[in-house]
Image (spheres, rainbow, N blue to C red):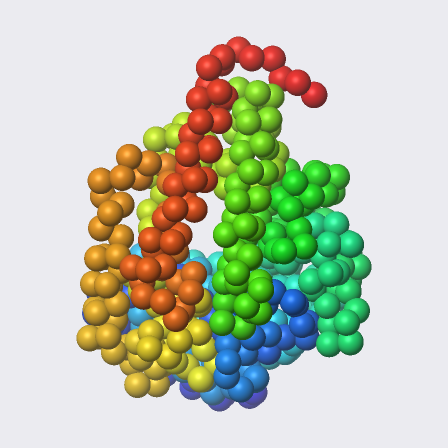
Length: 397
């Protein structure tokens, strides 16, 4: 692209009128690619395509989206731009051009922004990782623990496992982030599926000298098999059993406030303990409030998960936000979560999700997720009581 053309496009975006304050967002979930190079057995997005035609965002739409984002962003707040659902690095060069455009526009407008990409980690190499670190881009690597478990689920189209490539690139980027001062970060996300137990995942990451990581249960999906969906409650039960065992083990090992620097294990336990210690409540998710998602056609949704059902569409980058549909969604989510207001675990609950099953109503999703969230909160609360009984407790190696 010529500098003259780029300058013209940038100035055009600068003159775009700012949106109504009710239509400004600080978190953007961008489906830059609707496709994936892996064929994970439990994939809940139809291999990144979400039931639509595979592809990626055109440069014209990237420019339009950039203008749209900054027209719908508060002037005095930083923004986060997350790239997920499909495998973004299937189109690495196009992503870099888009990321540079966003960063340049943010710099020109004096708006701080953070770019984060969720990736399976298999399409990267040292040169690409260096470029991402230089730009301060945070990466979340999807790695499901030990190789034998990871490779049972995360396979390429020929049935080959993806562990070796993913773990190698994770280690490289982790080392880069340790040295890099530009704000890049390296995070791990593990899915506990029908082949995995949380009890298998925890020791693996501790062996990698990773103190805190994300671990979630494989959720139901219209793209998963009936057998996988039927096994969801059983997976939850096993996950919660391992969750409680680890929480109690850590509570007996640590103390208050020592856990803030010495806890190791799944992030969920640490986050709830931290909220109990700081007496700081976690808010509900920002879907449709301060979060907006967009697909490769420019269609807008309250969050990434709701892109799986067209009924949740709330506008388009070119045509603008459909205010009536967005306000209807906000009213529905408020009604679905009304039970939170009188719940005794509300101050430290990890909160339910409105989109566990995009085919269900917001209320149905919230009710199902509420049970699981309460169980996590109860376990973390009981273990925190053990943790805080003796502030002078000696640490066990």
